[in-house]
Length: 215
Image 1 (cartoon, rainbow, N blue to C red):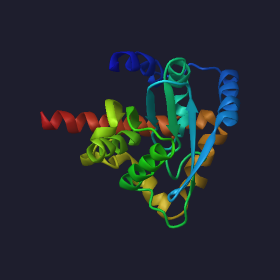
Image 2: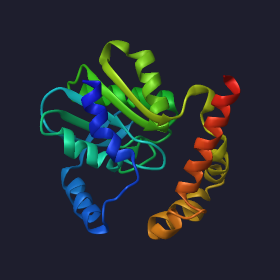
Image 3: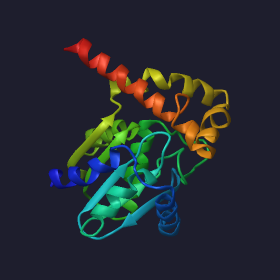
Image 4: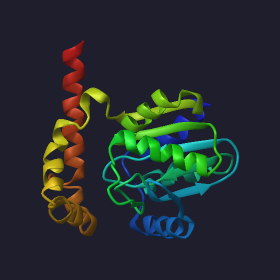
């Protein structure tokens, strides 16, 4: 089962080759299909497509469940694909004074699954969503059939050093204006040395150095 899921997910995490027109079509479909579930943590946005055994997708920062559109397209013909927007990202509306720390995200995911009457999932996660997935497995081992993690954070490297400037900007209420909006409005900036791609490359380099030093 994990092999099948991996073959569907791997191409999605490779370099994005979708055209702008294809992304527009996918975005329009996502907007039509998006659902919301009211929980104590807020009004959680999610995609629920397909029928069968449930697969739960957890995206990374600063993305949304839209990250998984390709995998969902491949799997939803015979699997029930659940992809929430984590708190603080995407279209999820966070309750007032609600923490968005990884442990709180785990509680939100648990509430979402309970609200959808889903007892067990095959869990797939990427980036910061991977750290949340690991916590979910630790706290709810009986609810996870299989676990598939791509390049992701772990407790000893969360947040990655490359993202510390982002956290400081967020605390100063500058992150969205100085970083996120330029990325959204100008894809050439997002893909440049000043964009998310460069941050991801730096983060991966840091992880490789840490892994080498631990061998």
